[in-house]
Length: 298
Length: 277
Image (cartoon, rainbow over all chains, first blue to last red):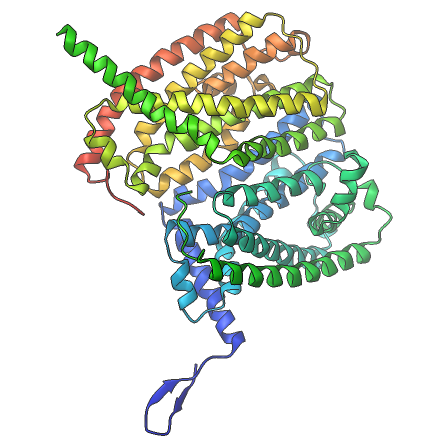
């Protein structure tokens, strides 16, 4: 941040560039998000809390599978289910982390109006609020995968993993989820009593339609097409190809890996543009209707 | 003495009804909530149904999932509208009013439970009916009275547990939110919401029986799918009914004791009016 001298000797602070402002908003929001997420308890309980929930979610699927398979884990569907479910942890973390920040700041802490009065970029601030959840989701995903490899015998040999593909898919997938979170944040700005449902509904629909825990081929034809139009589907397909060498979806098997990544990248760009435009539109409506400090007690 | 008892009983009942009323009427306030309350669990149920179909499970497993999915509505209600309720009341400034009101706090908890049961039963029925219709779930109960008995005893024990948890949560601030969140998936796992609990092993199932839904679900599945449950039965239905009755009485008794104890503790530590912590 620089300083400039005006004609009659006053010193004023020069406005930082948009990029610098966005970066600062992101950093501050990430730190604030981490404090909110973690400082309610001691580090040990927080660590347990962060790990037990997702591992329990994964174990539900493991036992559902074991009950039917009567102990056999050799079916290739099992790693498909396990890896998809492990990475779905990010969907809840990033998507809901970003969109829930609007509700938290507007309704719980009553700070949203002050954020609009502060020199920050609200979009990067909201994405920053999701960073803490993303970090927690990363640890939970890693522990879930380690549990799968160590305790359930899922074969993910480090030498066989396509690390480049995994890293690229992760970056694109997380960006897509963050922008989807921003889109939901925009919707949340305009809604009063449906905030919770909006995020949960989208996360639930992604769980059902993106081939998270079963191949798209099992879905009825109409729903399969919906699934094929979602970036999360291609994200999980790319992640599975990177980790397991096979995406597991017959419906996507014909696509080369490069095409899967290209579809993911393009759909992320489209989602990014649509999300920012929608958020700015929602923001203007919220300004006009006086919704930025709305208190609905929900 | 008799007049006092009558007056106290009337106050108790009026308080319970007064607290139940907003939960019953609240459902009319935003009718679209009902749609979401049925639709959201149905998404999860649908995903689990498709998993079972993908791995070639018998059709009865679809019934297991739909029944478990319907019962999640009750567990979520216990966590978020019973256990955490006094925390929400503290955050919104109502708890002080509850404390100074000349009535029994147990009546307030009872009202929360009765209102919660009414509202949640409509949601659970919605999930159950939608699941049966969408996924064509086969259901042929061997004894309808036994099924109703198990269900009602499960609810009594479960909401007794909710009243006890509400007392325990009285001490907490933001922890309440996180602890309630923590009790979702792990309980769905150990109580066998989506698969027969016996699959976890007898000892784990026994430990999980502290959550009444564990026993209730197992008994209801035995009554609905006797052949399929032969290999997965945890305990005989009669034993599960008896255990549910004991849990119900025990939870209500301890809820009464715990409410007094934790209220006094929270009062001494100044936590009854501490917000945003």
